[in-house]
Length: 225
Image (cartoon, rainbow, N blue to C red; front, side, top):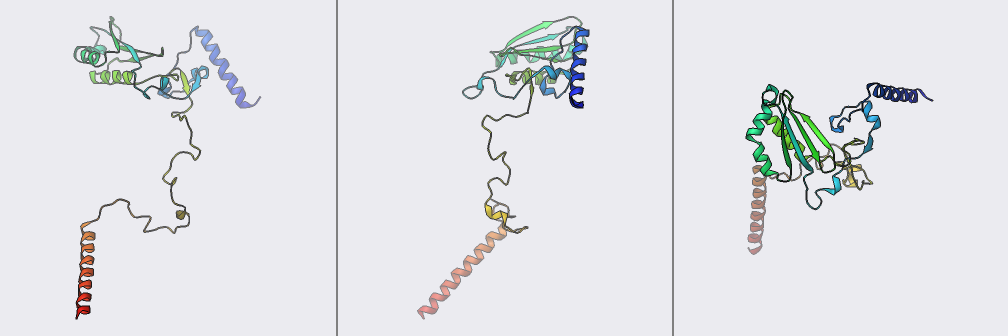
């Protein structure tokens, strides 16, 4: 065994010992939080993707129900109470497919719990949050979709069903081969593409056109004489 393998074994044994000693299951940390801990050793790995190709034909909101928990008297639930008084009815009318539950609790902090169609649950601690912050968090929970990678460790933050052979696109991907032997700096290659003509350039073209017309007229008169 190498030193790296021994370190991994020590980490796994220490995690198992702590979990058995505390007699509780290690809580799953959301991959979007970007927090690495020992609990990620037991998570499955996956890639981010839309559940059931959602959005290819038509979009189906993945949020099934949302529960808003608050206290009627505690100061930390002031923002939640303002949201319930002013914005909850509008949210329910705009999203008839989402079931909204309001659960008052005495002397408890404000919490927002969301349940999705794939069975995953997300919760947000809204203690001491303002009305605007709660409105933004509700919109985040409504628009996001956990998908198969909801309870998994993300290998990458992107995923491509059909990977490209030539790799990701760069500004030099579809350039002409003549640029390989060009001498830089080059006035032709350094010119801005699609830039409209300036007033000076337009006047110069008009002046050159007048000179050509004048030369042609003088040539015709000399030939006729």
